[in-house]
Length: 317
Ligand SMILES: *[C@@H]1O[C@H](CO)[C@@H](O)[C@H](O)[C@H]1NC(C)=O
Image (cartoon, rainbow, N blue to C red):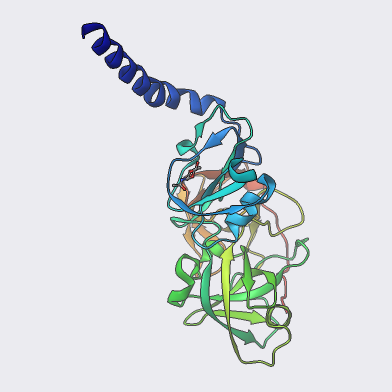
């Protein structure tokens, strides 16, 4: 009796030890995230939402287009199965497996507590008649191709994608039943839904006459400009050579949402509903640093001297 009992006790103890303490220490050192959000030989526990028989390279895309999917695991079960998963997740929740065919990943970048990839359906869309600069006051720049403007509203069906200055310049994906169209937030439509400019409306609705439509919309990590990485800009309509007053915005942030900013110790405040912060007080030297903080807690710092001075705002149609 005694040897048997000891064997059992040792077994339980080491099982717990390997799966708990030791495994969690190993994880952080060895999961190699590719393109930041997927990796080989890893898995997430539970939270299974649905599954689909599909090849591993299509699993992330399937998750992105599945309502509620925030992360996923692919295994070779049944010839290859993509296990879609729901709920808040952090990359640190992934654990390493010994199966080298497995793939796991997560949807990137929270939008105000939400996760990129969350799709909001049944959102009212209207057609924006005017051609204009828009409340965001986005600068003249080399914009990514295939993006069309929207005045973003704040009705409840928009969920966490209700307009706020931090969404200025973000690229959303809208689908009104005629295929998806990438739209850029350049304006606000407070009290309303998605006010699609004529180019966006025509593509999204299949050239429906002006009126109403109902669409789904989700945030993306697409960049605004044709180059990569965040860019700091002066508001083109602001003074650019006043050491005591600055208006600065950060765009091309790959889906992150700017929440606050600090210039050389001066905390900024949103300048109305433009995509720029106002900074009062100084003098602030050209070698000062402006630090933009995102809703996910990370930040991006740039020298004031590297903030671009463009004299014109982009006109959207
Ligand atoms: C849940 O997903 C995992 C992969 O993460 C899979 O191995 C498991 O079989 C799934 N469980 C159920 C009950 O579907």
